[in-house]
Length: 414
Ligand code: AMP
Ligand code: MG
Image 1 (tube, protein in one colour):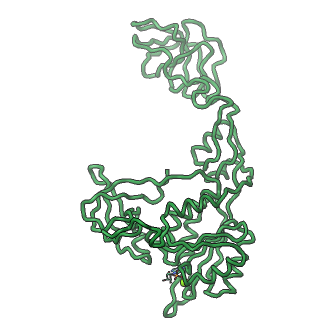
Image 2 (cartoon, helix red, strand yellow; image 1 turned 120 degrees about the vertical axis):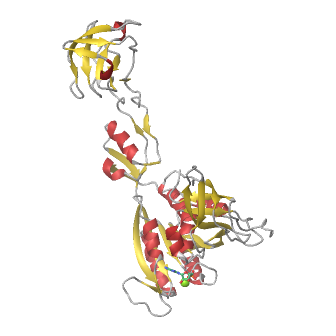
Image 3 (cartoon, protein in one colour; image 1 turned 90 degrees about the vertical axis):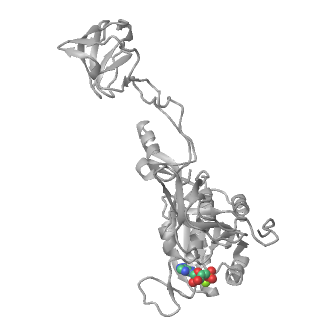
């Protein structure tokens, strides 16, 4: 095995070290806006919400059945109670429940004042106004107590929090129709490269369609982001400078792809040296070695590699973490699973690899993974087939069939 101990010696920066530098540099947007609940899904809650009411606000029934007072139970023997009315959901029983009485009750209906128990309708025999309760009738069953879900004045939702459907339900249940959320993060992106052609035009020899902008468009489709697609910018210093300066004017973030490797990057280095700052990193990950990170004024800059799979890997592992931090979203961890590898995997020691895999669970519940195909950083078909990364550590020199590997299912943040 090769010596891979010293990343510094090889001029490589680990993914964690790159993230730590990025995270130390960036701070979250602070501006907020008020939004009605329906428009807040997927957005980041900026201020905690306190419950103005108890949930539930009334003691109510968890079943369709009969409500009664536990004091009427005759332990060990059946007993009869007189049926004096009905409590419907939304239409409570208005009378007083006296000893020896019960009411018909439906799920969600308020229990009469003295009642503290509900029996399922299947367990009683009702004949006109007399209801026969069984010998084994238990007290305090099937009752939803006031505040058992959320207590009045307690924190309903803490901030920051990315709001999901369940959160909208919780807020709605507590009568909250408007929330304060972080404003959207404004992100501009463009592709660089003389070989790139926009869709709809006829390819000449040596040209390729620009796939990265579609990848970024997909990756940036997020309710927290407002994106501006700036198209393809040729490898031309003046045009590149114009694009960068214009994007920096009214965006929080600029993401470019291509031209980030040393040598290629001269233009960006020159431009950003004049109006901002940029560091060119060689990240110890494959795909995705070159990555530029910097700023033009308040605008954060990410220069991603040109190869599409490297764009996705650097976005997943680095840029998305930074964007979450900027939008004020709490950090998330990537779910890692152990899976038995069904294909031999080639790898040289040196960089952490995110190979594209297809993860399944076999009939015994065991996770198994196979390679999604060729692993070049230009091989889009394998990425499209894949549903996970197979994470191979720096020191790994390949995997044999039957070995255990770590996999990260796509879209599995916890
Ligand atoms: P570069 O980093 O500019 O040297 O590009 C590395 C590789 O990625 C080259 O093969 C480029 O043609 C390819 N590439 C760069 N930008 C794109 C893009 N927007 N879409 C597809 N491939 C690209
Ligand atoms: Mg290029």
